[in-house]
Amino acid sequence: MTKLILAITIVISAFPLYYMIVIASRTNTEATDMPPPLLPGGKLGENIRSVLANPDAHYLTGLTNSLIVAATVTVSVVVISTLAGFAFARLNFKGGKILLLLVLLTMMVPLQQMGIVPLYRLMVNLEWVGSIKAVILPYLLNGFGVFLMTQYTEQAVPNELVEAARVDGASTLRIWWNVILPAVRPGMGVLGINTFMLNWNEFMWPLIVLTPDNPTVQVAINSLNAKYGTDYVLIFSGTLMSILPLIVVFIAFGRQIIGGLMEGAVKA
Amino acid sequence: MSLHVDAGQPTRTPIPPSRRRAHPRSGRSFLTWLDLKAAPYLLISPYYLLFLAFGLFPLGFTLYYSFFDYDLTGTVEWTGLGNYTAMLGDASFWKAVVNTLAMFVIATVPQILLALLLANALNKRMKAQLFVRMGVLLPLVTSVVAVAVVFTQLYGRDWGVINWILSWFGVDPIDWKAERVPSWIAIATMVDWRWTGYNAIIFLAGMQTIPKDLYEAASIDGASRRRQFWQITIPMLRPTMIFVVLNSTIGGLTLFSEPTTFYNGNVHGGTDSQFQTVSMFVFEQGFREFDYGYASAAAWLLFLLILIGSAINFLLIRRIGGNK
Image (cartoon, rainbow over all chains, first blue to last red; front, side, top):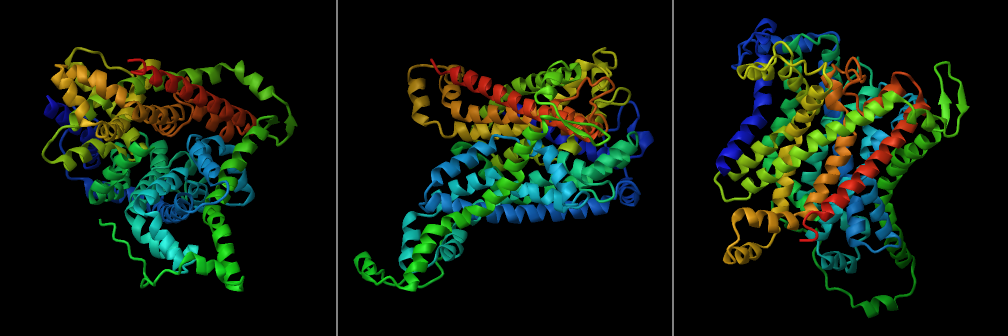
């Protein structure tokens, strides 16, 4: 029974992804056959080339932009969260408890959706509309990251270690660099992977603030979807390529991702 | 990965605290004092500066905008609560609210039950544990837009796999996109496909923190497995359940990507807005009609909806197993 449940789940989980490969490697006539095709065909290379060459999607630009945005956001969020996590977990300062509580509260508010109109007007005033700066900056704000790194630092770095370094005359920044960073590296990894994946998938805000000729990969797919709604093989080839980086990350770091998720959930 | 800690410096003999305090107040000790007092604020300042700029400032301005009337010619006029009162009488806003709530319920209830079932199955000794868990979590790493594209095809009226399967049972082709309830179901399954495995992993984490001797004691008392699940697992899972349900509430009530992609990237949510969510309504008012004030008021009402939804669900979960 248990095995059956798990087997069915895995089949259902994998089927849409498999189906993506099936359609992406067929022709449009085959894709609309009845009954639908269930095995991959031989047209994948050709379809991918037509996505890359499509004049409306700017697919390669989208892919490059997504990489730049996700990587920049990931590195910044990890650094910002590790700094704040250290302060909240291992330093005593006035108002620390309340400030941490504020972080937790903001995690409950869908800030990006709530503030969407003023954020857009801000980008208009800064003349950043259409530039990837506009999709990087608002995402550097990540309460979950601060929360996670506070938890992680508390668990990974004993207070005595910080005290000892202090007695040795190390400054706070030096302690962060030499004591905290080496100890919380696994936590940084989990946060980094999560941030990268979430950011890669971001859709609403890039759709508002970017233009179709300088998109992220999700916006590029949206352009394909909007303009070529019935050209299934084109859209599916585009989506297939857009998830490949995530699948690679997932396969490489599956153990850490699951471990991080499970740890984070119990502590929350 | 090991947790090897390298302090980077050879350890020196610690100076006894009494001698340290005896030092005269030199420039160096002032710097140390400053470092102790100011460094924590310095470390958290990047986060809080970003929070001010991209969190609090937009939130406040959303409220401010919601009191003004913007029109396409660029005139801006103070209307007080005008946007809010107009919206309470706006049928298209209420339609979006109903759509959002309906999709939320259709998606979340089966999702939580399935996730519990799945977590229970995962919480047993098995071979290839990592492989199975990764298989369960696979949907999460797929981008939302990709999921929606695939499901839109699967739910196609004429060539979709789902109508094809239903035809084996003599069901006539369903026009998933055009009809209201079918479109809700189609979108809800997209949400569920993506999040059920994730929630199962979270529940699994919660289950593994439940002390084993509770189950042993129950077995000795002759409680069946099923009984143990309902009497021990579910009540003990309450904290995890709250986390999962609040997460689903926020995610479900701000649903945007799936229904938008389902209608080929259009935020109108179908010919008759039959699956337009409140988030899509905010988007449409703000960035298609350019009525910033109305969109901002809608955003605040959405927030209110989330608060009410979270509070109701929180109270509901607290009652589950709370008085057992």
